[in-house]
Image (tube, rainbow, N blue to C red; front, side, top):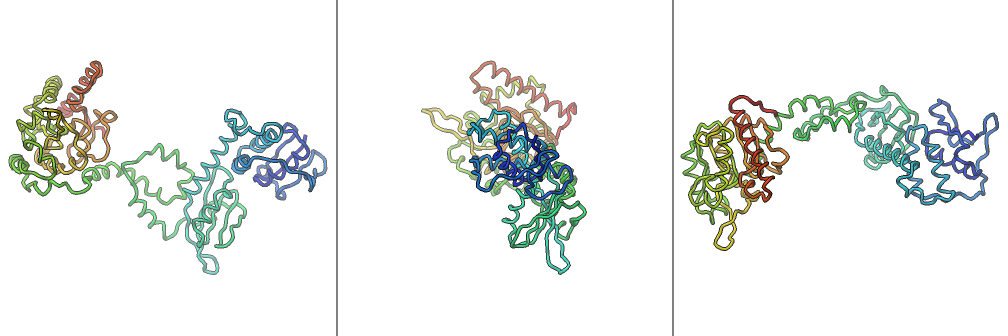
Length: 482
């Protein structure tokens, strides 16, 4: 058995492996020993030795070096930084196979040795990424009054030499040090040097830039994207003490819901073009009369008339559709065509009376395309929805409903902006600035367009169930989930 005690570095493994290959030492005859794990201090690239025998000489100076794929060298550079005690035996076994009849070994992803090496490499690369992402420098002054920035980081593996050159490129004019328990890296503007590891208390705890950084983080934090499970997975707790922004994380998470509500309330992008036509008064008759002359978008040019909402001014439930259809455009009332009849049937099944509901559309003019003598519905686009948004906002402010149900994605987007999937979010109830309960469901016209009878029947059942949920919310039998 040949002992191979080496420091935990790629260079030490490389030198030892060359000597072993020169001796044609098979992997099963080599006992690799990680000197750092044993607390021993040895010179870099120590010679190999047999038990109770003098040091084994290195390969002869003139001996030919084995040809090794560049891909293996990159792989070994990363894997050597892993803390797995089996990494050096695994690397040498793969190297021996590569140089003894298996030159394409690394292309065999299913090979157990290759698969294990790739997993170790991935763990190391991920740890390097965390070093780049989680290092936070603090400003200090040395005895001569010179400015230096110091950070402390606890990596999972010995990856400082892989990750430190990134900071050399990013901060070339700044003197800095990165301290870890294994070793430290120091850049003076000209040379990157490495030294022994240092404990956490060797680095400063806080400096005057901390509060500035926390202020910046509060400003860029997006409360709509809070995902605590993902954050804990990607940002392990051991790094929290060195990340100043995490000292305000509990505050930001606690206030996330209210901030999202405020964002949704103000999320209208550019000003709605209809604002120029909307009167200050929030009385429905006044709004209806003003809307009749609205020319905020081009849809008014081909539509017969404005189709404003209708229903009690104090209705507790508001239904918001997409836009009027052909029959609605002709008679000037919302939901009187085929989709309206589907809606009336579902309302009746849900125990609701249309007479007590305010019904309107996100877009007030009929958008259509000619098909012979027929006028076929055409979906309104974002600018048209935005142009009409001021009318919908005025209706909400006038009626002040307790529950709003959006019929279809267009209606939902008129409130939320951006993308909204009815398929994913149908029936979910939210507390919003517009109503204490807000939800979305299918548009009744979508049910009519479904070609499959079974799918149409199932969708109608879901549609009626969602309206029944709205009735339960009004009766106080259901609570708002978020």
